[in-house]
Length: 218
Image (cartoon, rainbow, N blue to C red; front, side, top):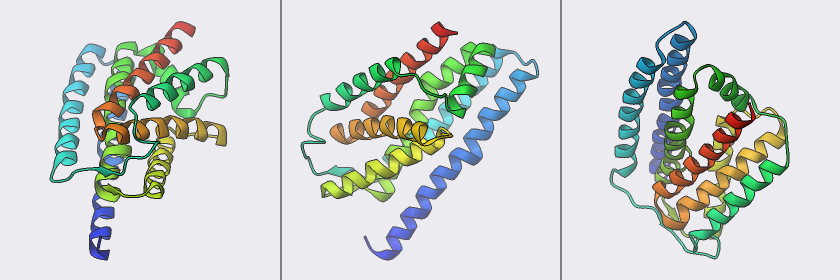
């Protein structure tokens, strides 16, 4: 890409990330504030679902517009079963090894006890979809649409997984690495099929299992 195109794409991707922090994060925070102040959970959930659907639709159209991901197939990206196997191993390891909860996880556990329907809906459906578009799909679209070497693929995985980890507010290196590994698995899933829906499906499965464990252990 030419220099001007690179900076244009960086700017457009920055706009994507800012849309998450400035727009969607404020919507989520506003809904939680209303719930804390005594608002009706079913009503707030309905409003949040409608607004989230509009935002996700906008991300989907943004993601689809005029581009195609091209990934050179290697042993790392040639099988769709590798991400599934890695995710199963990761979940099993997480279940066996206890660690300090991140700020993000503590917030989820706190609000899950207060507003279970709203939080379950958010972390099982909305968060995985939006996070995959922000940290995987749209990053690839603007910064890594043509991955012609293994080095480009590894750089994409590293950057997307780092952003994914930072979004979850890690307070230690161990927590950062936990989310980094998780993000790497989802990134690999995306690259193996070149379809963001595969990464979203694995992300939903991971969050569903994690949510059920949190609910059962409370």
